[in-house]
Amino acid sequence: MLNENLPEIKEIKTELHFPTAMASSASGDSTLVLKPPIEELRTTYYKAMKKFVARPTKFGGFANSHVFSAMCDANARNLVRVYEACERLFTRLETLLYEYEHWGFLARIGGGGSVDLDAVMETTLQEPTDWEINFKTIRTKRKESEKIPDSVKVDCIHLSFVPFKRSLDELIQRFTDALLLSLRKSTLNHIRIVEDFVDASMESLNKRPHSIDEISAAQLEWKDIDARKTDVQTQYQKAEKKKALLLAVLGGGSSAGMSGASLDTSEVETRLSQLPTRWENFEIALEAFNDMIEEQRESLKGEIETHVVECNVEIDKLREQWRAKRPVEVSSWEDEVLAKVYTAMTEWRQRMDELKTRCLTLTSNCAAFAMNEPGV
Image (cartoon, rainbow, N blue to C red; front, side, top):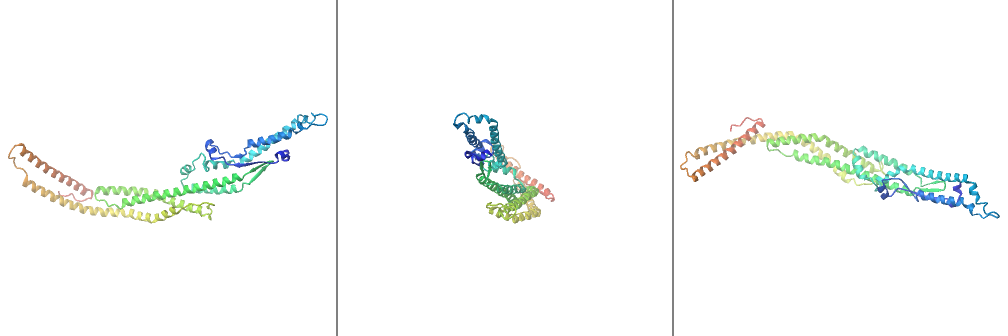
């Protein structure tokens, strides 16, 4: 072709780049860019082509100075074909660029662009398979990136992919690291949920109730713990699966391995290794709860019987004191004497009310424990 043989445009060099973080964030666009840009390439190319086409106008000739300058006018149709060929060249270049345009999304999510990668992962990645699919996709994309050539020549335009490939490797690695961090964070969150549940449950299950109200409250807590147990077991299983995936990805030697990936997993492994023993102790405490409640009920029955005896003693004592000290008649109707009588009667009333309240409580407790009604 003509443009391949012109010394002025023997080779026009350009490089493919990802858009800068600032540009991607400002415009929300992830279009790949050329440096120099295609507009500048087009200007350079057409400037050289125009210079070549205009050469005949510079020839002086021997007799007639207008002989050569008329060549341009005489070949106007052919010149149109030349410029059409130029447009086809840049169309081919744009088509080539379009083949790599799908990589541009990495600039938005992995290069400090308009998308908050951590927030996206936190909302979209939930199940272990979500991370597994993404890791498989990354491996596939990494293999695709390895097939990208270092450079491509489109006629006289030499397009270098070296800076693009370098940035692409960095973005893929950054995305991989973000996935690993997200997976570790999610795993630790599952572990924390299980740990908090076990700690709170053990605290409730190890408390000994000392009244019928406390026993009722403890039984309600037990039912709540037992109802939540299945959901927490699911959290436990997810933590195990995510830990296994995390270690497999970081292992490198397995099919799930990620080249160049590294992350500290000691906290995940340590805390998760302690859960089986803690969960087993929780299961034992949960199963032993009803036996403990029954044992406590028998213990409380004995306490109630003791309280009934004590209450009867107090009633007898109050009755004897009343018979001995109650005012039979008022010796004087003076205010001072009446005030003393009123004070004494008020104290007797308070003591009787207290005993009455104790009797009602004991009667209620006996009924709750299916005991005979106390003779108080």
